[in-house]
Image (tube, rainbow, N blue to C red; front, side):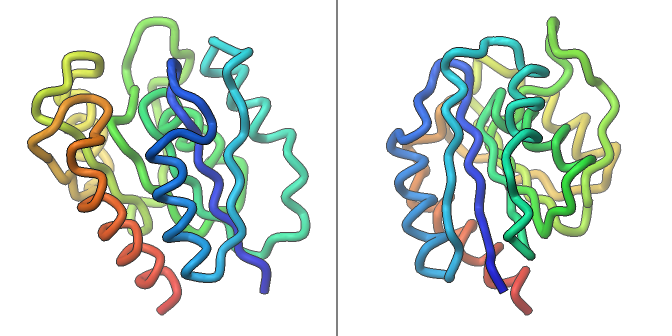
Length: 167
């Protein structure tokens, strides 16, 4: 069985930044291939969704989507089309101006959401609204939007998430 984690970076991030590398290490340890599409040329979140959906994923039996900020929006919207095993969201950019979709249908039992109390880019209330609507546990952390200060905690949570999906 071929397994893949796709990391979707945020608006002002790069595909192979510090968070991406940390998540890639966890995924590979758990037997997953790892991809991080380069969205830097595309500022429109809904065009990024199209870019993700255009990837050839036919050789993978199991796909886990990870997304940070705008990338979390991209992952969540794409999850409605792709057959995914899980959704791991960091400071998701939901309910923001210029983002086409405001209604989502995540696989609630296989979705985890993390957000920083000190986030001034995407208000934590947006993550709370999403989680409340879909009955998804929200993990609030003492961090800003980038969540770099809690990266070791996030990678531990991601490791547990992948382990849970395998059981």
